[in-house]
Image (cartoon, rainbow, N blue to C red; front, side):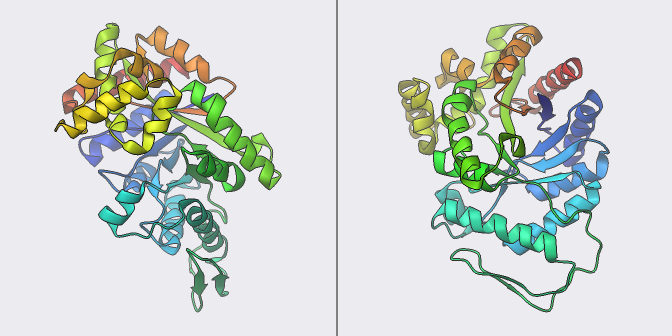
Length: 339
């Protein structure tokens, strides 16, 4: 398996420095999310400051930009990185799209399918000067009189899709160059739920498993004291457990009751970043890589044969910056040992 990293920084300068350190340690790719920062701007900062690691968005919101803007950003990032960019796209949830971004929701699977097709079409043909016309219910494209007057780094930028439910995961298998898991993806979920859905999508398109990069995201907290490692990793678990959309995900792992208790603490007034005290150890162990370096290496082996790449990220939710820095340093040290 390849090892990738999701760098953190209180400032962009610090995030970029962490990305360079992870690249120097042997990380094959650097992935950046979109929530508190713009994924594409952060990716640009990393692309300009690194030389060997792939740089990707994990993930950029697909429906809050037009496919034309997304394609232009992808081409700019691919040029800036020297052909190292991967565009990771995800739908997000309905409330985020409609309430935060005033974006259309509709049928997210069909919408994302059309978005990917439109982005790829623009990337492939923007330099030609010919009309770019695509029909569609969600993202029709009617571009005339446009030619991008710069040589493209590539005529095809890899597009990875995020998905949790079976339909969106199958779409990644059908049309994506890769699939990016939820931040708490367990080996059991990958084997029994995501894997079969990806296989369905691959079969639908007549593709082989080798045509798809499976990227697992894993929160990683390393400490010689297992209780301390779990305490730090409980925050991200609590954050996702507070979201109703993920109830079925937790139920699959036999943790429906624990998830309801976390959600109850959230409704009672605990902030989404401060739910660690409501998260039991069993919940942390199910979804994160915690403990001393040896135990974390053992937990990583459970993804062998299921994932092509494991993206490690430090815990952040509810932690002070100084503590996140220490956690990040331990993960980068582990990457150096692994690679």
